[in-house]
Image 1 (tube, one colour):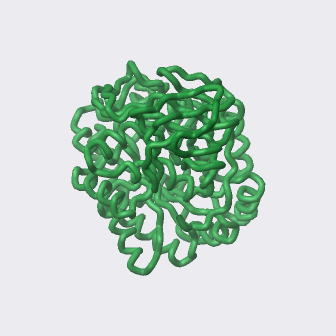
Image 2 (tube, rainbow, N blue to C red):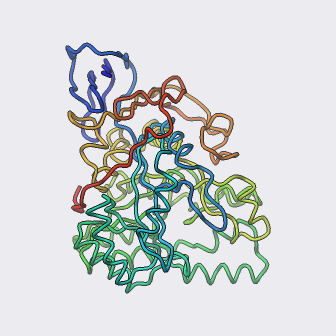
Image 3 (tube, one colour):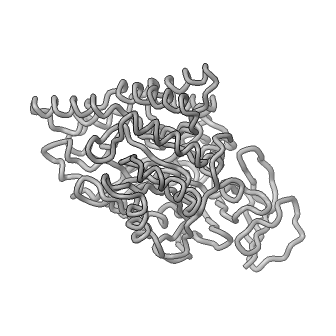
Length: 460
């Protein structure tokens, strides 16, 4: 198949021009004005934006958590992502403490292989770093194309590693050409506050928020930056939410250090006032929790300053009945919220349409930087000759309202119910095939491809 997209406003992280784009097979063949190609399909994109398929580097599909599983699997989750303009996701494999990385990879492949609609890759979460695990790092990088390794500074007894394990992992990952990412919150303080609130009979979702004050994230982010500086390992903080944590990264730049920072769309668009709604607030129980309005402002500023490089989702949805497992105890509410479908449209509407970020910054943080940081550029994350033909055609003026009745995620409520947006995804092309058009998905389960990634340089 060949496709010619004509007269669109073609936007990348660095360019913005009216042009045509010609696709043949799975690749972009040409970009320019009045291209002379004849194609099997021609799309008139006059008045529309044309930009790269989005990359969401932080999702949890079909993930075991707190005695249940996240409600979107690889089929429903990657399909919902496509509807919103995200053509690729990176999911997290979670090592079981006491077992190997290979064992975890086999478990996740059993859920993903043949089921994804959109493209995907994996991060490997290392929860038990020891001499045996250390030997597997090279295998993951060299043989599997898994080059990013997730760590947790919280969830003791299940996911958390200590500082000595963190340093050992960083040294090995640096040696093998990988990158270490982190959930940076101080688990010991959080566990203390959870126990304190429960002992006092304070059990509503509000106390989930109050058990994770800003200092828990600021302290852990600072400590992680110090360990990364000591080891020289490329480093990335996931779902950073607050001024204190971002200031820890800003301070690290004073010693010429570079730490990559991801925030998530909910931390740019929602705030902690939502924890004052009784048990309905369970919809927004996630870790870290939503923060204050001053933190929202800080994150938008950080994007424009270049200290926040990526906007992801931490998509981890649960049905309302699953959330009700914590109806009488906030610590039993499954953590996470649904956003995989809405990231691109929310970022455009709240960012570009409201004058907070430029169109180029929108593409940079939602598409290009994830590809660069995680070893996929330039075959993913941009519109360039030779790149994968992952393309979004987007109406910047169409208004629409988010809600459970119109979304495609496998979850029975919306965290953004009734929010009116400006800008809507119209057509999505994934590796040269029209995947979404007229609000219909035209590719099937299994079309999504596992993407092997290149070694990490730590430079973008």
